[in-house]
Length: 127
Image 1 (cartoon, rainbow, N blue to C red):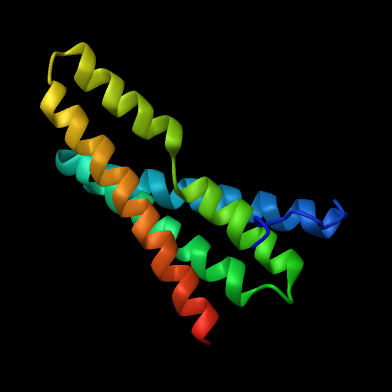
Image 2: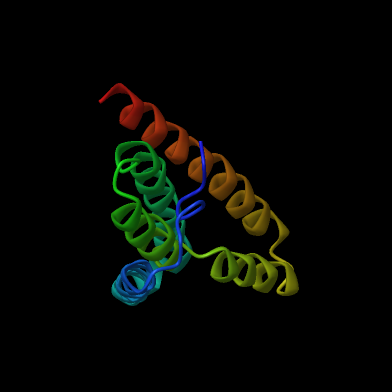
């Protein structure tokens, strides 16, 4: 499997697709995290797992449509999911001395996002 957007020339259509997808994904993530502010870490986990699933599905199902694949995969899924926000959440918990919560978040995110991506890949390959 080739990561989304790799091997595709950077045409204006590709750049526009990634920009629109990325801004849409980032706005959706921000809206979800705001909507579920009292469950912020759980909402971020759900965003990262569902975004990983969607990317796994996209890289298999959109192989023949490189611009759409890059716009949705690199753009939307890249903007929707957030490694940096996750890292700050874990670091904040460690800073506050909540080591158990930080460890749970790390394990849940890595296992959940990887499982989501695998499920998306498998579902996409079967179609």
